Amino acid sequence: MKKKVLVARPTFPDVIERLQQYFDVDVNRGDVLPQEEFARRLADKDGAFTAGESVGDKELAGAPNLKVVSNMAVGYNNFDMHAFDAHGVLGTNTPNVLNETTADFGWALMMAAARRVTESEHFLRAGKWEKWSFDSFLGTDVYGSTLGVIGMGRIGQALARRAAGFNMRVMYHNRSRVAQEIERELNAEYASKEDLLRRADHVVLVVPYSKESHHTIGAPELALMKPTATLTNIARGGIVDDAALIAALRDKRIAAAGVDVFEGEPKFNPDFLLLDNVVLTPHIASATEATRRAMANLTADNLIAALGEGPRAGNPPNPINPDVLKK
Ligand code: GLV
Image 1 (cartoon, helix red, strand yellow):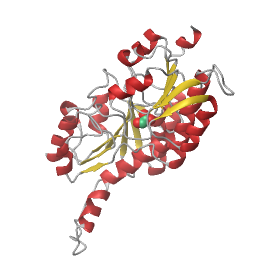
Image 2 (tube, rainbow, N blue to C red; image 1 turned 30 degrees about the horizontal axis):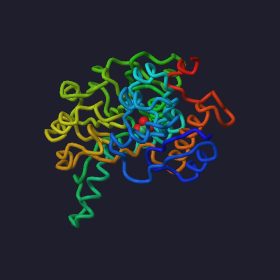
Image 3 (cartoon, rainbow, N blue to C red; image 1 turned 120 degrees about the horizontal axis):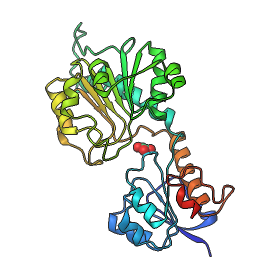
Image 4 (cartoon, protein in one colour; image 1 turned 30 degrees about the vertical axis):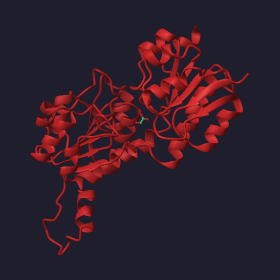
């Protein structure tokens, strides 16, 4: 008998077809499942394909056959990994395939914020453009300025690598320093968070979300930044205290921000909409056709392998808690 798999939200049809070669697949083709409904459909499954669904003790306890939950994202703060370990369930994610695409988008947001791209477009669309003026939409230079990357993992490094083309100084802060060869290659100076916030012209956040990284940037941190600086969050909602960011943008404590991820998304603080100096996007940093396909296929690869099928049977490419595979 085929093993049973839940695909918790819609994905590429050919990826579902790949899963159907091996498994009896229950696909949610509709809206995001309410948590109770997700747990109910997970209950008789051996594996699941998720994209942000919360999985913790309650869901795992209710699904006694479950071996693996494969998340279509590099971040997995939606998984309670203590519960996964306790229930002997494997979690997997999709690192690497989105590094360059996400770094590109970090730059897009940073540059749009610094150069007031969306704000000036809204002005034009509203029919307000009557003359060219020397002081219209003056922004902050990116070329030759100082980039501050908070979170120097794979995506942070990809972001920093692009700075050479803009003749930028690179500062970074991370839980631990990266290898010297990487610092040298990226021409990146390690700094405390406070030092980086004081000196950087453009701060980009790429840290994973955890209890420890909650509100990495709040009012005290924003107060350290230059009034001409920008802040870009492509990390996770909750890394920034959104209310504090809104206050800093409103009071022109900092010049502008780019925000792709929000506390409580897809809901977000409506006061963002009252501000001109923020570029707002709906969590799309990895959203190119090629990258989202690569992520979906990797999610399927992990699921197929973890359930003992396909060319990598028993050896999924991206285990988060590989110890459970030994049991
Ligand atoms: C997207 O936010 C991801 O974690 O992949």
